[in-house]
Image 1 (cartoon, rainbow, N blue to C red):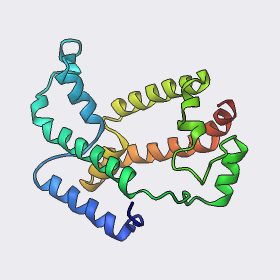
Image 2 (cartoon, rainbow, N blue to C red):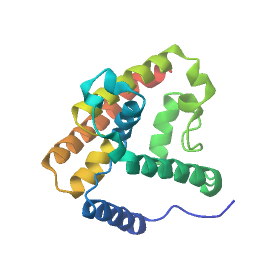
Image 3 (cartoon, rainbow, N blue to C red):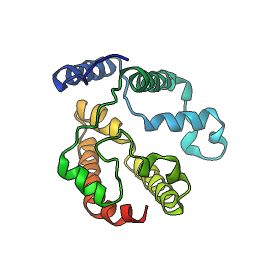
Length: 187
């Protein structure tokens, strides 16, 4: 619809910085995973676990923030995303094509990973289930998600967030170089 290019880092970086500074000034911490805890508490999970027994009404602002994130993502996909190929390095596209992802570099979300056929593949479903359990466990164990630690925690100079972010990068690099080459041929 519009011929817009992604905003450069020197525009978006300061915008994120200003947002985080504003949140810190009003005493708020940003993180997506904490909203799952809030939603579970709203749904009555506090009767099942002490972890969900907290004042969830004080976190309503974060639910609104996530709603804005979802709306922004929808607007970007439906109205701003171009049909141009995804700009990835040719060697990466070639490596992914070697694993059976034929639309690597030409589709924003490759069909082999995100298409309807992935939902009928038991290996893909098992990988999603196990991956989701690891992400959920890791988020709870690290007391926050990647966005919470990398954006909010690091901006408030929290040592534990630096350790968590280093762990996220080690896990991501390990999965990319060791797990994905083993898993992708099975999909």
